[in-house]
Image 1 (cartoon, rainbow, N blue to C red):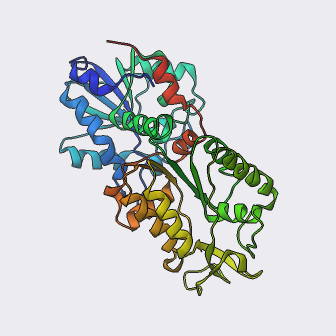
Image 2: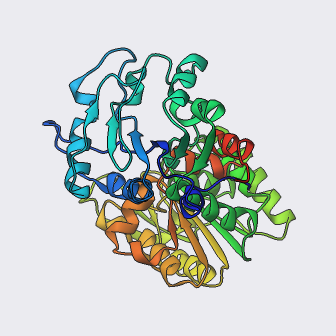
Image 3: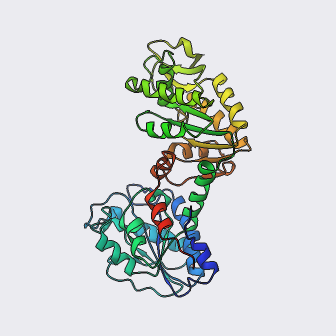
Length: 398
């Protein structure tokens, strides 16, 4: 994909004395007192900010936070705690500008944080006039928020249409390159793990991947639907019977290509969904009517691990069992360790996936961890994200 990189502009000295508008993802979790509980996204955004400051730019940064009502400022959705944290991390004052859309005063080598972009009326609707006002504030627009790349909003898309120069920041560039490496030109065999509670939420992803991957591993409630489609009993497990035909079609399409959808041969069941439920390992053919499938069994885990160790590329979205409960976490743990040990290029995304990776201490052993939930899923569906589209349209050689 052809797009302009902010790092290249900095290296060429084209950023000095320029007004740079960075769209970051600073949507951090906070407790009931407004205290930031996890500053990972803030830290991930700092390299782009520091790059702009070091290059001598006048830096403006904005982000969304929460889901405020447009046109109404609220303390709960204010970026004030974020400004304070960035100031601490950069060891420099970072003013927060509340009313910024009609003009920003910032000097070269300085940074200001622009209040929650979703306070502006028209932001989510990608209003053209609001987009033009944003574009008028700067010389260079830098999109560095992959988590918003699937949304066409003023601060993610509209501004890029009207600004002089639109480019991708280091975070977004890394996401584009990692996804392209995994899906556009993968090293084979290409294995994809798609798990979750419902087939319906990921049906388009499954259908899209069925035409691309060599092995499509399904897990969680999705696996139950595929087991039912294969004629196996699933007891009272979470399932979508009305999508059994769709599951059969995915299995058929994979087989037609000489590829595989591995169906669990053994599972871990319980009679209730709870952390202290008694876990029982049994053959997939022997699940009783009053039992819930909450994980794959050791034989299935070993089979998947063996296949993953042979893979050339692995795309992972979703744990294969209820990993939050220790008794039903062995399948996800086994799969996670196999991915970490594999020589394949591994790309992981999705909140639960990242939580599992962190739980097993494997963050440094996965090649690329995507920062975007919805954006990551839409890429797996085969969609062209709005951010990628507009940056590609605006790509120019300078």
